[in-house]
Length: 243
Image 1 (cartoon, rainbow, N blue to C red):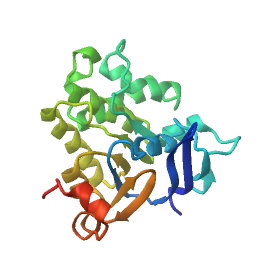
Image 2 (cartoon, rainbow, N blue to C red; image 1 turned 180 degrees about the horizontal axis):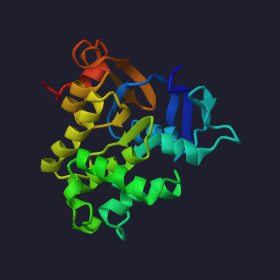
Image 3 (cartoon, one colour; image 1 turned 120 degrees about the vertical axis):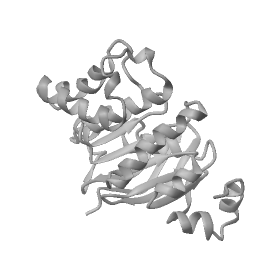
């Protein structure tokens, strides 16, 4: 069974239609990159998957169950489908370690000892273990984003959603974050990534989605979308990309 099934998804803000009938199946181990120009609906789509935006129409099934049902436990779902934001969303009044522990102790009801052990494990994994007791405000953007990824991993998610995880970073910090995500892809972590980093999308994805004006215009392997597309709109979008 698919982890996520998205069927005929629509989202409008007043009279503006942002998503116009999106269908997508996400299986365990998929790494799906969503590319497209600004305003194509990429961030709205990924925010709908985590119910940060409520779809106007359509269905989203998680392990076969509708996440839009009235009795669906959204908080529990969000621990299984984690989100990494472009603006990090860390708590500035806590050190790095406690940012990673908070959700584990409050939502998953893990003991402090267990939460601390797991936090250190994932902070070390993303190369931030030595900063465990540092203030968030003392970190660079790239370091903050790596902490945000560690924090998401601490919740033991089945799927990780990334909403342009490098767009707020200085160019020299982009690589350190993309390297962490690349490592996760090698470990078969299921991920959906909205990104402007075309080489990265080409290298790590099992599937690439090209979104244009709220519709999936193209879907396929990186080779199919980047190298073999017959679609003129896709060609125009990718013409600056050489690899």
